[in-house]
Every structure is written in structure tokens, then in C-alpha cells.
Image (cartoon, rainbow, N blue to C red):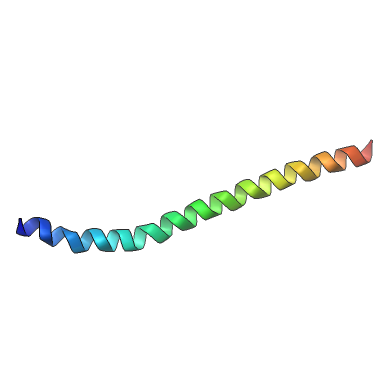
Length: 51
């Protein structure tokens, strides 16, 4: 039981440092996906203007 209680602070520290890291990685992928969608839309607009 004491061993389990010793791991609780370590788990909280891991969550404290991993949660922002996971959020940052998710946010970066979201931004990249949005940029790719905007690029595709702009390419379609440019193709229509060239016709």
C-alpha cells in the first residue's frame, strides 16, 4: 500500500507535464489540417480564375 502511495505524486507530475504536451501536439496537427484545407480551397479558386 505504501508503494502505491509513493507512485501517486509521480503520476500527478506525469499528468501535469504530459497534458500540455499532448494538447500542443493536437493543436499543431489541427493547425496543419486547417492550413491544408485552406490551401486546397485557394487552389480550386485559382483554377477557376485561370479558366
